[in-house]
Image 1 (cartoon, one colour):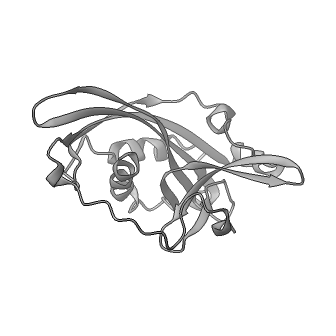
Image 2 (cartoon, rainbow, N blue to C red):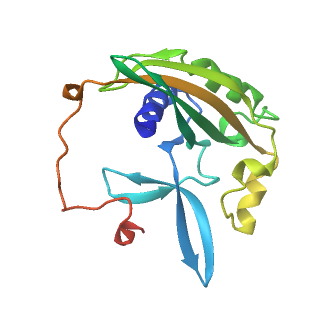
Length: 200
């Protein structure tokens, strides 16, 4: 459900002229390199069946992804199960590639917030979707603290680069009528998110 929600938000901001490398909900990809376990923000590309990492890179204007901070049940009624999702958008900006006159990413962050809609239309079984941007996270390296950057990556958190964390609450409902859902299809062929053979 969270992936579908964030994909809807991604569709709203992908067209912004500074949005470059963007993805939905990331999962931690753990890679053992020379006996050291490194953790990266990762999304499985369902088209190529390859894992994509979302790390600051000088070739991008920006890197944007989302973190899932949990879903709670907000009570049910006769027709719907109601939920609240806590989502964090993380954005990294390469200021020289966007506008060399910019000294920080404040305008970019506010543009992202402005373009996140208050409500979204129904999508498959998700309905009554309402988004509340609750604030920006304090700008410290802790925003990326759950990931293991190589030393050369930390330079991308200093000027002329910038970054932001945007917290939001998304309320949504799911019909209790099972006819609203597609039937489960078992398909053993192909690659799944847990198949390490798919990692480049």
